Length: 288
Length: 277
Image 1 (cartoon, chains in turn red, yellow):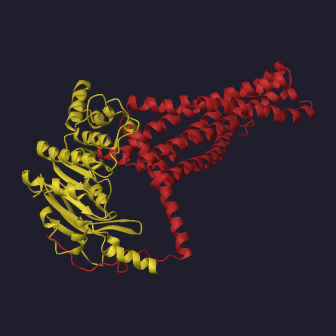
Image 2 (cartoon, rainbow over the protein chains, first blue to last red):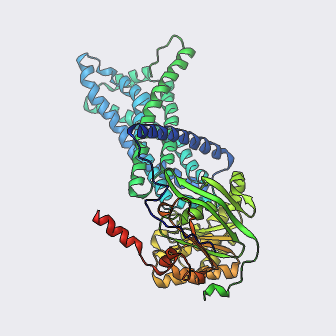
Image 3 (spheres, each protein chain N blue to C red):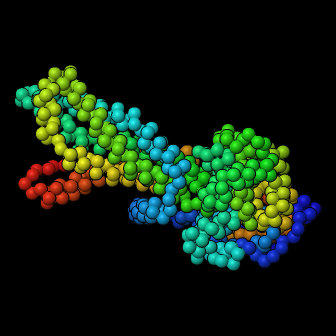
C-alpha cells in the first residue's frame, strides 16, 4: 500500500501558471495560430488519405448526401433566383440610360455563371451546411461520441469527415449549377416580363457572350469551395471546446473561416484560370 | 467485506501497465509520475476528487490521449509504438462505458449496439440481430427499445445501452467512467450489479473510475486514490492509496479517510479564509 504523507497546500503547488506579459501573450497567440494552421493541414491530408484507404459505407454516405445536398436545394434555389432578379433591377437603369438594355442578358448571365452564382451559393452553403456540420461534430466531441468511435476501433476522420467531405465536394458544384440556372431564369423573368426588355435580343446577346467555358469556370471554382467548406467545418467541429459556448464558437468559426477561404480561393483561382486561359487562347480576353 | 470478495481473485500478470506517466494540458498538469499495474481478472476502482485526472487516466489506458511523458503498455506492448491499424485492433479488446454513455445520437439503440461488430464485419445481419438482442437482454433492457433514439431513453437506459455496446465486442478489459453518476440509488445499484455480473460471467478485467463509495464497496478488488495535482506539494506522490477497499477507512493518510467519509474538512477552512480575505 502506497501512502503519501506529505502536507499539501494550493500555495505550495508547483503547477501554478507563470504570470504572462503582453509580449508573451502575443507570442502565444501567434504560436496557436501557426499550430492551428498546421493542424488543419494535417487534418486535410488525413481526410484525403482515408478517402482512398477504405471505402465508406453507403449507409453512412446516403444520409450525409441527403442532409448536405437535397436539404440545401430550397435555400440555394432562392439565393440563385434573387441574385438574378436583383442584378436585372440594378443594371437595367444604367443600361437604359445608354440605350443598351438589350445587352442586359449578357451582363446578368456572365456575372451569374462566372462569379456571383458560385460565390454566393458557396457562401450560403457555408452558413447552412458548414455551421451545422461544425455544430454537430462539436457536440459529438464534447459528449465524447468521437472518443467512443475511437474506442470502438473506428477512425473518426474516416467515419465522420470523409462522407461530409465527399458530399460537399461533389454536391456543391451541382448546387452551384442549380443556383446559376435559377439566377438566369430570375434575371430573364424580371428583364423581359417586368422591365420589358426585348426577349429575343436578351437571349441573343446572352448566347453571344456566355459560353460553356464560362459555366465551367464557375463550376470549377465550386469544387474548391466545397472542399474548403467541408475541411474547415469538420476541423472546427473536431476541435470544438467544451460546453455550449465552445460548440457555438466552433460553428461561428466554421462559417467565418469558410467565407474567408471562399473569397481567397476565388481570387487565386481567378488569377490561375486567366493565366491558363490566356496561354491556351492568346487572342481572347477573359477576365474572371 | 466487499461483495467483490466473492469474485475470483486476479488470474495473471499485468495486462495494463502505466509507467512514470505524466499528462499536461497546455499549462495545466493533470497527472504526474503515475506508475500503476492492473492484473488480468482484477477489478480496480480509481477514486479521487473531481479534477484529479481519473478520466484522463482511463483515456490514457486505451490511447484516446497520448501521455506527455511515460509509457502505457497493454499486454506487454507499448501503445505509442503501435501503428494505427494495430492500435485500432487493440482497442477492440477494450470496452468503454463513457460517463454520459456517449451513444451516437443519429443512430437507433440497435445500431448503437451493433456498431462495433458491423463496422468490423464480424458477423452477418442475422447474427448481428441475435447478438444485439442478447446484449440488451444481458443488461436488462426490455424488447421494443431497439428502434428508439438515445434522446428518447432515460439516464439508466442510456447507461445500459452504453454497456451493451461496450460488451458487443466481447472485450477483455472493461473501462467504466463514473458509471453511476447522475443515476438514482436504485439504478446505481443496478449498474453496480451489471458490472459485477460482467466481471463474473465474462471474466473481464475492470477499471472503474468513480466517486461513489457504494460502487467501490460492491465491485472493487483493489482501490487507487488519486489527489489533484493542483493541491499537491512538489515532489509528493499523486497516488494517496493503493490497496484493498477494506483498508480505506483505516488509511494513515487523513485525506483518504476524509474522502471516504465525505468530509470537507480543510476545504471548509480554506473557503472561510478566502471569504475573510
